[in-house]
Length: 307
Ligand SMILES: Cc1cc2nc3c(=O)[nH]c(=O)nc-3n(C[C@H](O)[C@H](O)[C@H](O)COP(=O)(O)O)c2cc1C
Image (cartoon, rainbow, N blue to C red):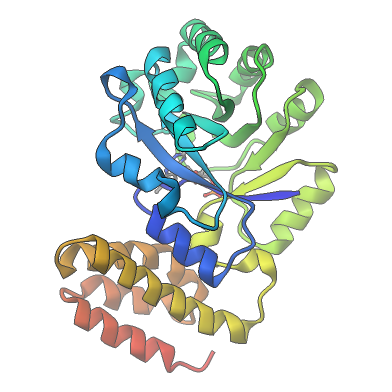
């Protein structure tokens, strides 16, 4: 079974991916956070940089596109193909209030006829394989069979299912019954996504869905990086601090001034706190820091903890 790192916009960019791979590994494919398209499918320079192969050396990456315009999708996919990518991923899951009203991401799931026409066009005209990352519906899981019927008409490289509706955002129970339905009714390779946070979760899903092609994990890897490799707690402690140093260094080199770097590190700790004793208490302190040096001082204290 393949292990995928989920795209997390604002977090799992090229610097994060390199730092994670160096210190933890165990990932078959990293899906990039979505790139948006502009007229003519041209990506912003910053987004292009994120997916350039020279910035993603040594790891397997699939770039993700979010748009509802077939022409833009195809042009962006073509640019990615020119970079050497053989697969691109279509975002049909983003639940953001700025994206959904534009009919993009999960917002596209409400417009099934348009979605069908869009898929028809992109599968006809793209010269790369296309995988889809989709939620199971917009309002309710009962929408899923209709969506799957649409996906089944096209040669989807892989169907990644975040087993929630848009209305659920990132909370509430995942709808495993939809995954079961997909296994019974789909010819596509399927990937399970949603709330996998431990090796036990992975084993349980593997046992419940034998022969499963892949699982995609996001927040679980942010909360407990490296859990998938069964790393010992001693090695983990060493690696996690090196990971934090690599991240900080990477951001320092890429950003101007300490403030955005500090912001990035705080965001990582939003999740990572869960792996540390008294993590909440430490995170509160980290959140209050105003200077990178203060943050670094706290990390030195945490490093000395006996755990
Ligand atoms: C902060 C954040 C950013 C996200 N950005 C993206 C994105 O760019 N593209 C995407 O397909 N999903 C995105 N997602 C959804 C995740 O990839 C994933 O589907 C979701 O978090 C459920 O998986 P998990 O429980 O393993 O985290 C994002 C989720 C979060 C919390």
